[in-house]
Length: 452
Ligand code: RAT
Ligand code: ZN
Image (tube, rainbow, N blue to C red; front, side):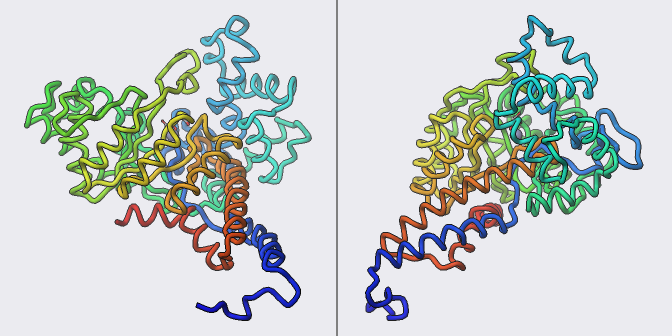
């Protein structure tokens, strides 16, 4: 078909010149589209104030065990930074127990002193604190921790959620509701409306069920379900009842499990307890409810328990097992992220084979600029727009700001380059087309996969 003359390069100019001009305006369009598009954050550890908060802010009592973490002391005591401070003040100089005995404020002082004042905060997690303070209108260059504390003490938890969501342009925050966590479980049982905040979406997370069925069955039995260590027909029925009840209580939009690198799935009749629980309990209930399962695979639990949440390591996972689940359960949908850099290519290939597999995010130790750039680039090359490029994994509310600022910049740079390559190949994406694609990446793919 003939090309419309209006789209032809002007007389005297080569089509390469026109493509070059297009590419430079395109880069600006892409950056604007990525900056403006509200994101639905697929996976966080954030909660609304109804779950209690250790930092009350203006007007209100603090709940020391509260789950909503926010404020500068919480930012500084993020477990990524706890791990980093033990590199510069090793346990032979400050024992783990002595660190954990300190108050949050003392821990924050310790981290601030050693990671921000006595050396420059160059790591990604440190830079994140700096970006966050600046975008909140504070001046990180002042190095005034007490001043930042005073500012946070004047905010309310609820108002801070709105402010942060606006600054980060996050339209919805997906929680991680860990049913085997007694503190959280109690809050759901005591207040059925604890999760009723339209800014947040619930996710039922049940690692123990798949990772250690005998231990999970003991908890279920304590809670009144007739579950036994042996996965009998009666046990399967009771475990299904447990899942259905908690999916309803939480209003879960999907269910989730974190699996260690040694996780294997061979076949539906696989005798391993984890595989059997997936095949007989989890996947049938999720198929019946039309909910996907998110699998996060590759964290080696508690390689160094002294570091608490920061003590997990990473290992190579088995992508073939994920492929077998997708093939064996075509009626189920799977989100998947893996922690090892070396798994990323194979996971993309698996996603090319199985339409019921949606790769997501650059998780935890991969949530660093060089790796986000590499992984996003590879995913675009192999999957086009059909993946979820990032989730924040924020544990502290204000982290949404830096996690999304930093990731947006990287995603935009990769996309600008890819649209440029496409223009040089002869296909110029319009501004509307760019915005459409960015919407898919930052919100639409997730919404469509959930709704399927
Ligand atoms: O990234 C993290 O904060 C980890 O501690 C984990 O929470 C991980 O993301 C998970 O969901 O297990
Ligand atoms: Zn997480």
